[in-house]
Length: 521
Image 1 (spheres, rainbow, N blue to C red):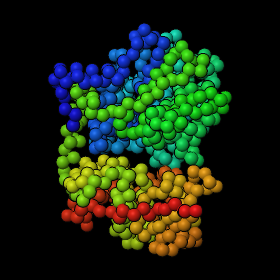
Image 2: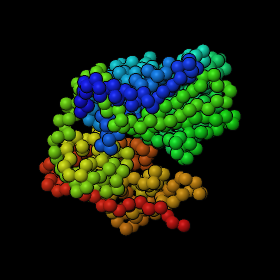
Image 3: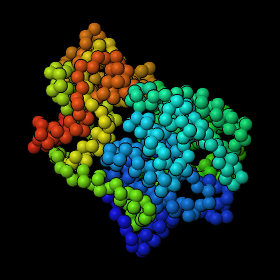
Image 4: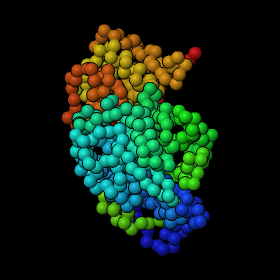
């Protein structure tokens, strides 16, 4: 819970710290535009267990920049919701109120905005005061009709800046039934068409694309492919893949500066996830069209700003934090050591749990598959609570058992190989390799109980309904036949396991081995 800190000395000290990082020359304010950007905050209202992030700290930075600069915009590239107890308990209302107080000017959708369905999304977005853009989603036949613009034009210092919003194809990533009526248009074609209109017809001096498509989701279109295959787009502010593109590093500097079809430089940025960083772009308006390079940096949102308190934000969070805090103190189990979300032990435990739960539902299961993205947070060493479990698996998914042809299952393993593997049960060993020397992978060997996949055999697979319906592009699973579904969401099944089931009074342990290996040449 974020506690109000009414000490005037503490507030002034924090303001001084923040302002010291963002000094500017007032004489130059008219010809400079500062864009502060976020993406994939995922309901991280308070600092995370790593000590980073938190919306009060972010407010300290935003307020300092606004105090120092004349032209400031705050933009968000999607997935503001889903991932903590705040979304689990309040369905997105908290995030809208917080974004209003932060002063977000323009925002786009992420895929997780649809997690509670498009009707719920329309309801919570009525609370949002930000301008909303959707350039390649047609929303006229959805409850979102009239809420989004295809583009917008802002004027700063006599210069016109066009903004567009680009989103990923919902098929394969957003659950079926959660986006009914939405029509998707191809990303690159939509971007080029609209950017040309803005520069040719509307005479804008620059085009900025807010995107939620990922940086390089090969073989899909991401920000890197958009930059390379576009014209007239000057800056891409992205989200979805949680990339931290830090220009202070050699790799980040290379990834942030790309060349478009006309040989012109495009700035491509993304600020990681969970509000740990805030992106800051400085545009010299006088240099637009003359080859000037925007300045770009990532600001760590950390304890330097802990003295700052915004009364409105503190009051807003206080309305909701008690409910979240109560769940964080309902102890349900323990671990011998800290397990992060990307820890192989935790993923293996989760996969094996799905395998065992599948057997409880139907009696026989050949293997289990879990997606790494289904684990959103880890567990602390020692006791963990109901809140920790919900934060770990926050999605309202249901363990599902399906019968799948071996040929379809083989294709699913190829899909999983593209992300260096996903979670599989203890009786599976997979080997993957590059295709033609590219950075794209496929499964070269998959053993289930020591035997290779038989294309003609039918396998009984335990997984979650999101994957069983073809989510994360595992369309081969969607061709299977459902034979059993748990009546409880995954987090409720896990809570029962730790409080009443086989896991009661046992510390959580998983196998540490990586069940996927890359072929060595």
